[in-house]
Length: 334
Image 1 (cartoon, helix red, strand yellow):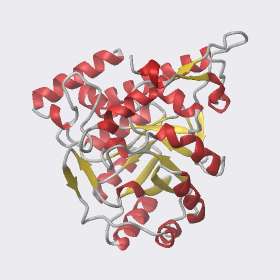
Image 2: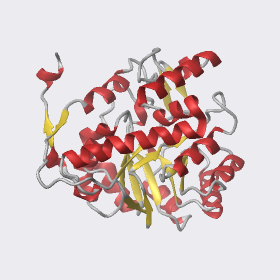
Image 3: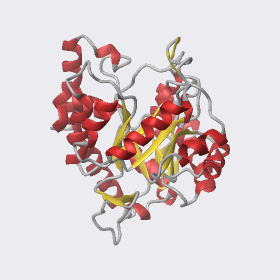
């Protein structure tokens, strides 16, 4: 099935269930509701348009999309975002997403979930990262991190961008359940597990520097897809400065608004090691359950492979910003 057919099928199924508005800002769009004016949701998509690709055809070869992360090899740098909920779409949605992710040779990430749901995902035997929310009770966080480690997760972490809760339109959610954390507290969390500890929601060089201080094992450059702060920076706006701080000392992941293989290529060119995709996997799940999830990842992976080949990048490691051209605001305004 082609990309457009999958999305159309997903929207048809969501509409039939009466839950289309839970996942799309407008019918037929590729956007989901964000904070206040929805600027970030719209800008996340539009910022990718600032970059184009140069052809580098002579001596080009068909590219490999294989990557190594946390001492494991994956067929693609396109990974699951840290997903939660989705029970209005289907039964055992996280297990079904994990099954599709495994079939595509990718990595599963899990967000808010019960201990049973986390264990069910881990039983799929797909390499899994567990991200816990920054709850008021740090002991709850530690318990969830350690449960994930004991269950076989390959890495754990927390959403630093959710310290003050999230926001959709004018509705703030979960602010009293969360709490900001200091470097000292995040060090304690990192020390509570032997696994790589990931900070999700880094959106500045300052937090990247603190990630090094904390001893993080990875970071996610993200604006939480526009559901934390209206007018937040786009991840690609700050990615180069974050990469300058982090270098190759830990993997850098990017999420927020990724819709095509071209978006993935742009993130990799600006310093990411891999990307996280959430909304698109939800659409795959809504369209055709586990098979739809695998199809979405495979479609984007093949789009990425083709772009890599055309731009002369034989491997993901060879991708850099020399393949990009930057378009100005005047061009984009038309």
